Image (cartoon, rainbow, N blue to C red):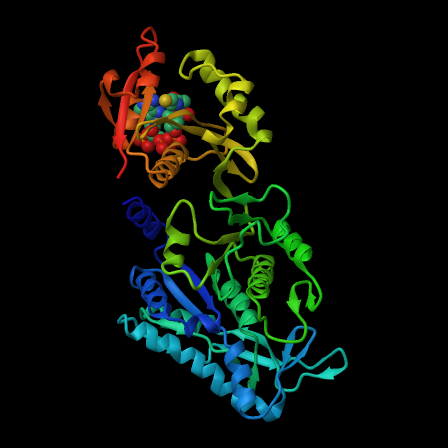
Length: 447
Ligand SMILES: CC(C)(COP(=O)(O)OP(=O)(O)OC[C@H]1O[C@@H](n2cnc3c(N)ncnc32)[C@H](O)[C@@H]1OP(=O)(O)O)[C@@H](O)C(=O)NCCC(=O)NCCS
């Protein structure tokens, strides 16, 4: 239910905005691909301007192999020679038509087009790159027109020079160039690698992780550092130097390196999601928790579990309200003791809100220590904190969430909470209920 609510809010916010999807080729071959297309089609049908850049690396490798040719790479860059360009064109369009087919099955029209002008890459490290191209220009007007018709533009990894010479341009480069040129609000990389679980990768200290251990967000510097930390033999700053990324880890890192390039080019949000997980795109975009890893280029707001180093900031937020009697008095030690209950709302790393969910047994939990504050804070922080905690409660099998309040009953009522009798509180809580304070009990059944 929460996902549906979030989806409505989100749809409103991104209606008419552009999102670019770069999908790696193995994902298009998987059993889940029709579902992915359904979800992407839903976004397109709901008014988001969807652009697709199909990855084709493995498809190109296969086509070359079938014709007795070897895939060549120079410092991680594919070198396409003149004699193999026909096979590369075939592979690029084969990959692109997979999307056309997938989308048309969902009644979404798409256009595979010549949306990129290319120029020869020239000579790299003393090697003639022949039919390897670079993006010379993105035809943004043509793309916009297709989008205006309610269609999805698909950009194969081929571009033509002004005199009609075909070049093989990396789909990563196209994804970055087109996202930047269209001012896309998001680039979504659907990888054939795995999600970024902190246990599987070397990660910078203090990165934000979800409860299941996957990395939620990385700033551009953190992402670049993470690439460096995971670079090893055969990788060149995580870009493979000799071949198409093969292992799951290599694929994930290559997606991360694309994300870093895109955020350097000014794309504000790049999401990396695991293409083998069904529904991953919608969950990443709509749910408060996210299902993938986001690299953000600009200021970023997020809710995450509290760390020890946040405690002074949390106390600073709570202090004036404790003085007024709006919040119960808690010391640094009290907070430290129940550290895992707390979440904080951070903007660019600084704490601007907090809240806690305390489990009392019997399927009940209490929301408390809720504060939203600071000059930078816009409306909605309190609501977002409560929704985040309700989702946490739901995931933990909590049936009922309650709050004891002296001054925010109307606010909680607007969120669906209803007044409840003190007798409905879990026994342990009832024992400690402070009759003097005469707090009101408001509760919500978690569904
Ligand atoms: C209650 C609180 C967390 C709400 O956070 P928030 O980020 O301002 O909440 P939202 O932006 O989602 O909502 C703002 C709306 O709630 C209303 N609102 C804020 N406090 C309210 C209250 N005590 N009673 C009724 N409505 C309230 C605002 O007027 C605003 O209304 P609008 O949207 O019509 O302009 C915040 O006001 C706060 O930190 N209060 C002090 C601490 C506190 O009372 N905590 C609760 C202890 S149980």
